[in-house]
Image (cartoon, rainbow, N blue to C red; front, side):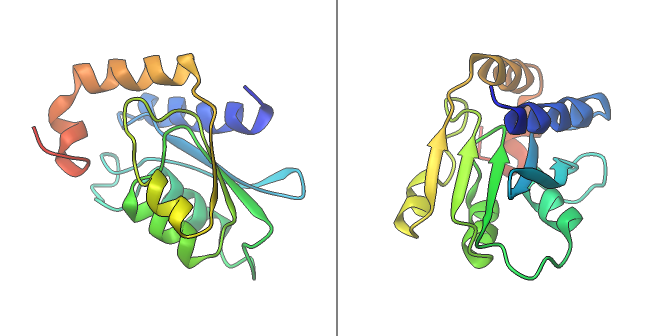
Length: 144
């Protein structure tokens, strides 16, 4: 795991400790983190406050995103993938996609470079959360 994914993982753990879904993200420019975020859907009672969206909100208006990389502990969903495409983020690095395939094909079809690190620690963390909290997970990700 590289430092950027480790930072995203720290965000995921922070969200979990707050009672939320353990997904985290960081936005990187020029080899440094410029924003962090984690899923706050439960904490803020906000269905669109996914980790990637929280991270982009925390970045604020940065002028351009075409020289950034978004790291997320889980493959982004279509909502977050839409934001990636809208802001012209050229590269997404996901910690895993085993628990959720997400919008990988959509991102690739839009010219986004997608890397899946396939990290066992993140697969285990997400799998455990889904098993213990299926009603929360499937509320906005899919159906039971």
